[in-house]
Image 1: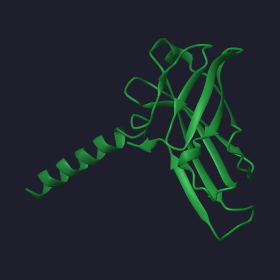
Image 2: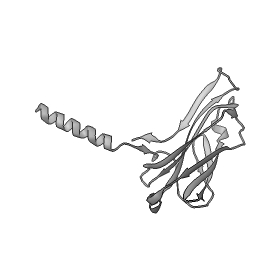
Image 3: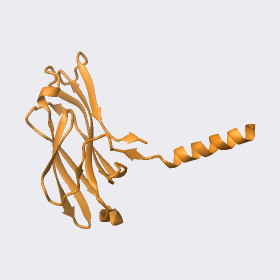
Image 4: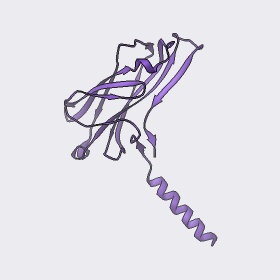
Length: 159
């Protein structure tokens, strides 16, 4: 009886380990459209982007604009800026991703944050692909401020 339980437990663990990977099925996404400007609104940022050919690879050129009415009124500085681009299949499984880390800067509520990513998708381009974004931002009330600080983020999750 003990050996049967051990076998079942080990089999279950192996199945779980084999199912790992990143998923973006909980995030907004748009189907891949070559060289067409698109917008992808999220909770705190809205991404305006275009998919462009870059030699034998494919690039995503974007700008992330703050959703003004969602940010705290006191926020005036990006203390940390991490922006992610995800390429996923129809089920939301991440096939490729790239992280952009930007230097801290003043929070201009009308200016976008630049995002660029280049992908070599190989045979993956022959299936329907989807573009998603993620971010992690630390907002503060001033440069080097420790009085008010909040982290906001959305991103891929481990399955």
